[in-house]
Image (cartoon, rainbow, N blue to C red):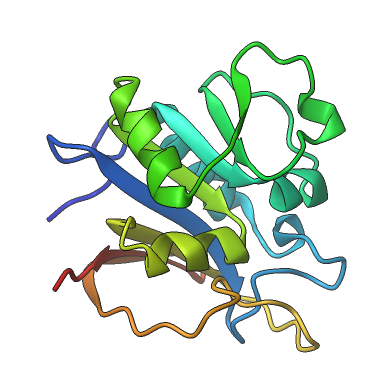
Length: 185
């Protein structure tokens, strides 16, 4: 199965779908020494980031990640999970703060007519989505960096056992781009 189409977009199945996108270092850190994922990404990851965003209808992100990564409003509608909007996103027309449980939030996005949700993090949000059985796909970029230290992994919080099936793996300039499908019981 190919995931990246010739025009630079990413394919989606013909049903509601929740895709998550993360970057990690070779030693498993989801953040650099400054606590941001932006310091471990590279040009290849940035291209994937923009291609995934361009193909999504909604971006789902945790408020903590939006603050830490200094999110700006995007062309795609953005749903922030948390208690308050980060200052950089206040007043943006296509940004809203979500309340309720994660299944309720995702169901609300689907009810509003959006089928292609891209979750950009963070690690606690991903853990909650996985625990609730809401994730269909994980796009994981592994950049050729070792960072050491106490950096978080892409999943943080509750212990999980989520089987994945590798759908595709591509290497470019030492960067690995993996597409994992979540196995459902």
